[in-house]
Length: 198
Image (cartoon, helix red, strand yellow):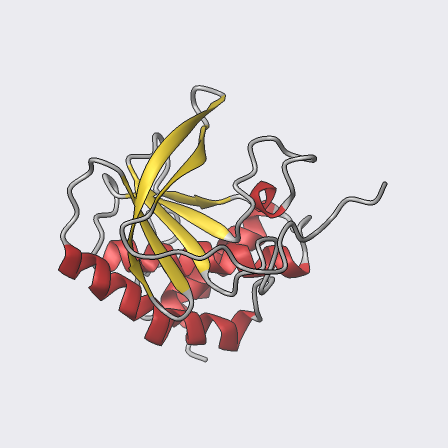
């Protein structure tokens, strides 16, 4: 039969302190493994989950989540469009999973927007992942990574087959438009980003 694009019309109720298990893609190990996370903070558009047992300051979580809510979320929408919302899980809030995720700074996986009948490792959320060993919560590097990954999520709602270098370039542009410098892949001397002032 047809593949469903929504697995729930009603969002699952969540409160701070909840625990949940997520699939993590260990890219270098070419495997998936499970991570337990704790819901640490909620805004109008974000759930902030942190790997269970990892010590992260509450003030840092609030700072980065509130910056995402008040600046990154509307700015990225203004320039790039919108993510699928309420999306596969029926929830208008995005899931941000923060933890010790190997070999990446962060990633968005469109595989999570498919039901488990298609992808058994789907977390069935509009979500992205941040490696807090590389980008500690509460820092500009972390928030720039949120802007980068959010563009990938939005882009997937319009064109899942986009050429990688274009998609990556737009995510670097998203970071710049949100007030953050380019990553190690495209620094401020990169002509496209340095010359863009609109």
